[in-house]
Image 1 (spheres, one colour):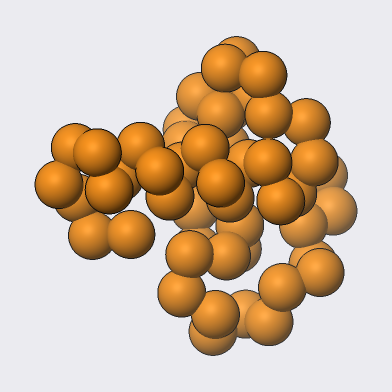
Image 2 (cartoon, rainbow, N blue to C red; image 1 turned 120 degrees about the vertical axis):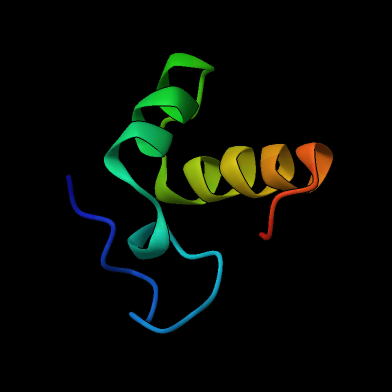
Length: 51
């Protein structure tokens, strides 16, 4: 899986997500790196986790 379109240090980038988070996002319909980042970031915001 190539998610290298984001700089390594950019907060909220797919490179800062765990494999479990990426798998969860894909199970919830995310396909592109942008969609994966959006799903995980929104979920973290809604649950009060740092995003």
